[in-house]
Image 1 (cartoon, rainbow, N blue to C red):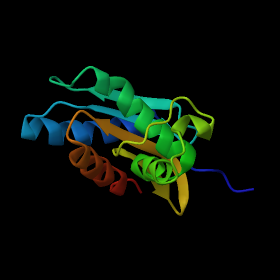
Image 2 (image 1 turned 90 degrees about the horizontal axis):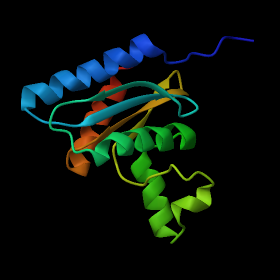
Image 3 (image 1 turned 90 degrees about the vertical axis):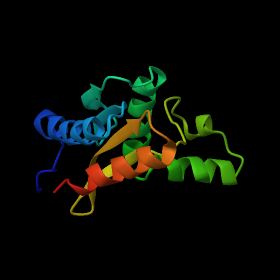
Length: 135
């Protein structure tokens, strides 16, 4: 059986570092969480100026994206379209805001990244950019 690719601390640290560089260049504050394929935290960063609620929200976005294998916004959109509370997914930690993006390598979700603290569209854009750098 082939070994499964997993995201680890070193790669997670590189991802949060790359996002931190972009945030710093723009003078913005946010939280960035990288989780493994099960949604468990691998690496985390809170930059100066980050709104405090964004700490847990970034982790929840990443958790949702990893567990559902799709962007957190897509999970929220589906729940809103069906008037189906996110709690009905069986995980109290789910959120439906944009900014949680799966990390996919060779069609396999190896983890997810969550960004929170910016306007939702900017959280999504930054998380998608970071996810796109994973090889």
